[in-house]
Amino acid sequence: MKKYIIILVGFLTLSSCGADQATVDKMTNEMCEALSGVDTSDLSSLMDAAIAMMDVTSKEDEYSSVTQAQMESSMKEKCPDSWKVFEEILAMGE
Image: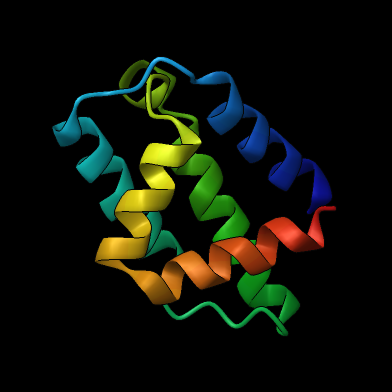
């Protein structure tokens, strides 16, 4: 699980240039969906979320230019509950 989180954070950190808003919105929608309804106290739910997030971040051709700051801002606006789950998952990887 920790490996998936590190890969996800690395992917988002290495993307430093910034993407256009349509790309950010598309990735945000996918991340919001991936994290919707996740119970961070349930290992099965966390694994499902990790797999779904890996599916999103594996789309390097589409999302490699999205920065962590762009995604954070967009997720906080569009799906604050999913952003909170994302933060909890990141904290678990530390």
